[in-house]
Amino acid sequence: MRRFSSFCLLAGMFVLALQHPHFGWAEIVNRVVAQVNSEVITLFELNKKMKEITGLEATELRRKDEETFFKIRRQILDLLVDEKITNEKIREFGIRVTSREVDAAIEKIKESNQLTHEDLLDSLKKNAMSYEDYRRKVKNDLERSALINYEVKLKIVIREEEISKYYNDHMDEFSTPERVRLAAIFLKQEDPSDQDESRVLYRKAEEIVSGLKSGADFGDMARRFSQGPAAKEGGDLGVFETFQLDPELTRIIKDLSPGDVSRPILRPSGIQIIKLIEKKSGVVKPIEEVRDAIYKILYDNEINKRYSTWIKELREKAYLKIIF
Image (tube, rainbow, N blue to C red; front, side, top):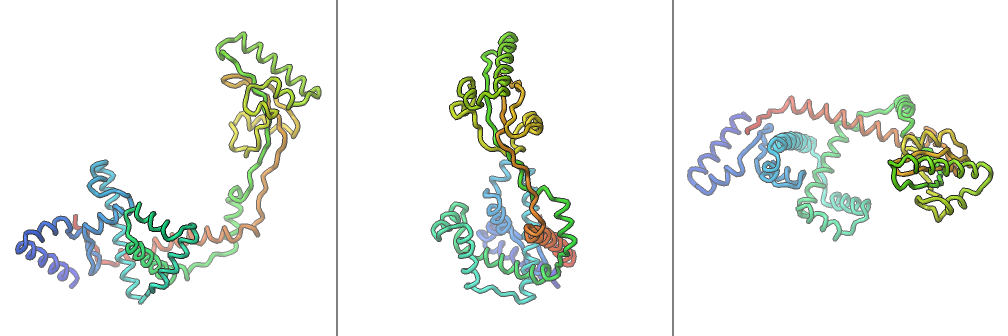
């Protein structure tokens, strides 16, 4: 019956095209590209969705990269197929979203993003979307959210042992990184290829290190000898998370205690002397502090997995015909 209805629809469009040449041109521009159960997806819908997602007209996207165009077009068509299937389920379950609920959702979006109504309208204009289209999108999102809640979310249970396992397996995600405060003296080499200059500069660096270890003030020495950043501030470079530093410097700092000075470090354009002013070790947050965050991660992952399985099962049961 569905196939017969589809045939009648297409046949009727063909007859109209013969009777009205102008309609025939419109049909070519806006032909049917897929049938999902009793509904159809048109080329106009597909191209509109493509522009909404990519920001480009279909013709422009194809002109830029034909292979990418066909790949994206198929992905977006699959997305539209999923939308048709979910819309059918929304109608089946009698899910309704009121205008008041749409208004409330939009207000929440504006509040979360600190937007005025004018800001929202400007943003929509930049994305070539009317406010009416945006309201329809929000309404559709709310309907799908209610459907997913009914079909997927209510069946999800996250056990305590899953939370503990995630915490133990991803402990680095819940750690504050190690931080260090550094100061530096930098001796610039005018000609990096000059070996004699290199030896003289290195001896000077050794003398500075020796003086520092004998009790000389690092800040005074930096103001006196450094040609690097923050020389006027006594060489104080500020605070860094250790992962931000280059590997060699990280290895050197690892062996230093607060107050220690490094050996002279050879750099491409000179020699550097580092002082570790302060070190704060990373701290792992206790599971009690991050339980809710882990629960949300596991919950969202389970939703995505179950939704994918659910929509795949619905696609397998649906009558689907792609007409390209």
